[in-house]
Amino acid sequence: MSGGESPAAESVQILHITDPHLFADKTAKLRGTVSWDSLGRVLGHYQASGWQAERVVATGDIIQDDSAEAYRHFAEAVSHLGMPVHCVPGNHDVRDLMKSELADAPFGYCDAVNLGAWLLIGIDSCVDGRAGGSISA
Image (cartoon, rainbow, N blue to C red; front, side, top):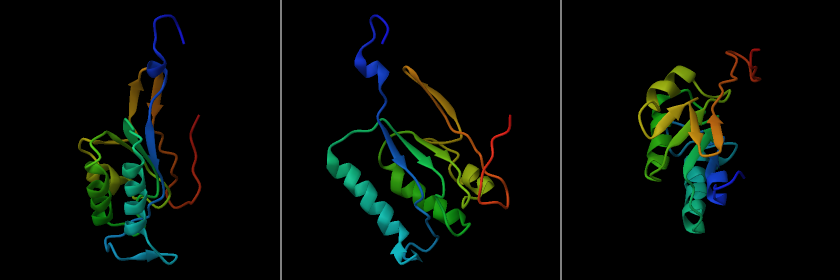
C-alpha cells in the first residue's frame, strides 16, 4: 500500500461463478444434477451469507446446449444481484451467442476494467472445435 491509500482501495470483493452448464430447459440434467437448480443454490448461499461482492466474474461453461435461451436464463439468475457481471467463455460456450445475449449492462464480455489497485481483464482463450484453450503471443 502506498501512502494515503486505505486497505479497502487494495481489495476488490468478487463473486466467482464458473461452470453452471445451463440448458434452455430449466429442468434438464447434467450428470444427474439439474444445473439451473444448482446455480440457484449457489446464488442462494451467497445471498444468505451476508458477504457482499462488488461484481460477479463468470468464467466459462455458462451453457451446455448451445442455446440463446440458456444464456437468457443465466442473465435472469444473476441480473437481480445488482452488480456488474464480467463473462469469459469456456469450451462449452458459443462465443457469438454469448456476446449477443450478454452484451448489455450489467454484462461485459472479455472486458477490462480498473478497480482501484487492480486491473481485471477477461481473456478469451477458446479454440474453436477443441476442449483446450490457447493465448497467442
